[in-house]
Image: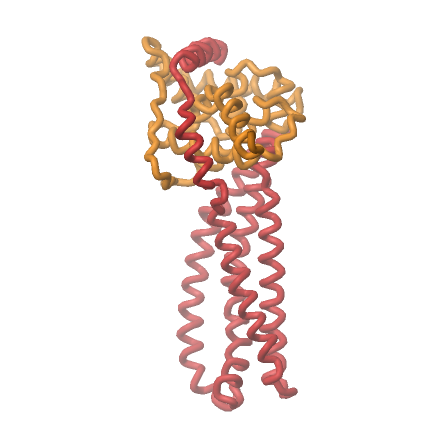
Length: 204
Length: 165
């Protein structure tokens, strides 16, 4: 069957639809009344959740600033953590703006697909990077939290933390490797292939 | 008539007028009735969400094709999408072609083997849209539409051949 024959068949299907479909107005009105159009995508929900979390942590760190002294082993972790949370808030806002810019209504099919795939790629890579950076965050959080909670310096008690750090880091490496494999070998490769397909479609 | 009610009425009239378009997109991107119904509802909701911004700069059908195809492509990538409307909706999709059902199945099987964007191109071609309109909906150049369609025709020939043996 050639595409031309398919067109004839498709037109018959169209005629059949014309004769057999009657819009269920009540159903459509009910759907619109339920305001389900306000549903958020899972990506957007997750971003609002991480923005809230990062915002709360940033607020806590800012408000606890008065408890930081000029001692380097407290001041440096505090600055690193504060920078991380500020960056996390900014990054979440940036991602939310990107997500809200995806307009599936007025954009063309190709540009929407391209934007969505690029976003998926950004999100997948971000997950990998956040896993890689997590130990550094933990290393900066431990001294400052120790100081705030027990009013003593982390380095004076670091031996107590070493076994926990070693076990935690070991688990972390395994988890990161697994996540990287899952994300890279599955998601990212698929996304890259989709982007290649889009590029091929755009090329004459 | 209050503006909200008027908006709803105008929207329903548009949907009534172009309902077949939505049915056809659903038919091409899904295979079972439940998925078709889910996609149908999602397209209507997305169109309703977009409707206040629709400035009639494009033809209604062009706008609705974009909404329907964009929604179909993104929705069919997600799995197990269920909606929770009070009224359980399972649309009664008409039988494809009566006597020519086998042919229709073949058409569906062949098109479903194409990548999603090419499937959209084929749908617009089957809908007898001009190259200019296909280009406007898809976001590629008019000359590119011709080139792509020639390649897709060739590809379809290769896909259909083993299916008809």
